[in-house]
Length: 280
Picture 1 (tube, helix red, strand yellow):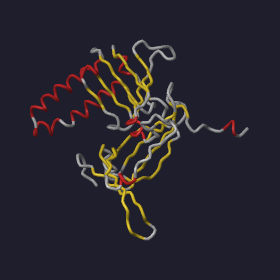
Picture 2 (cartoon, one colour; picture 1 turned 90 degrees about the vertical axis):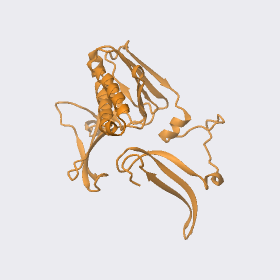
Picture 3 (tube, rainbow, N blue to C red; picture 1 turned 180 degrees about the vertical axis):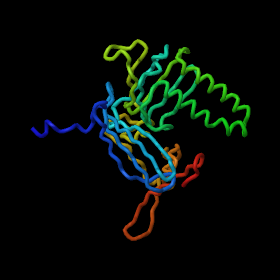
Picture 4 (cartoon, rainbow, N blue to C red; picture 1 turned 90 degrees about the horizontal axis):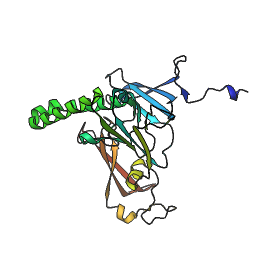
């Protein structure tokens, strides 16, 4: 009887009930002092369970918001192709994981996978975020490269026009983890403007996700066994995010031997954020 009255871990958001938010003290990666991380476990209609995370540091006032799907990585990737034809289409809800890429073919614009953290937004929010990111580079380019700055300003103006909803365009959301979502306004009926399809993830995508990838022989039950002799003299580059500023960067890994008591083999890791905060 008691089990029947238990509150589920992931609950629907309801205006009549206060959401159960968990607060945790955590390290601020900007100033190395203590901030607060808030966690909300909830469900999104017609989607699945998610964890919404928000961090705030009272010392340096840095804030960060992120969304993580609570479900496992799916067997197949998912792709949504939306034809935006009117202002109502801009209000469609979008759940974008960090593994998702966004493409607007008409402008030859792309947001690559792993370049942004996961988020819950709308189609208009995606465009607004893209415009804000491009605008942030204008001041620097106007000094260093005025010609490129003029072209970028013209491109941002074209992007901004899309927010009116009067200019038709196509939005493609592709996620190899299979956990992104784009709202169907006619749900549960089919939406003539929205195409949803699934695809087999590539070996490169499987490695990016950190899951098992079949080897090139086609044997699904075999795993990749690296040759240790080949690895000991090589430095492997792994795409990661900077622990300090969260920008995309590379982590170098090298397998080595060390002559110390209790230690025989070691893997050395080095992360360099050369293009952004330059932390190591």
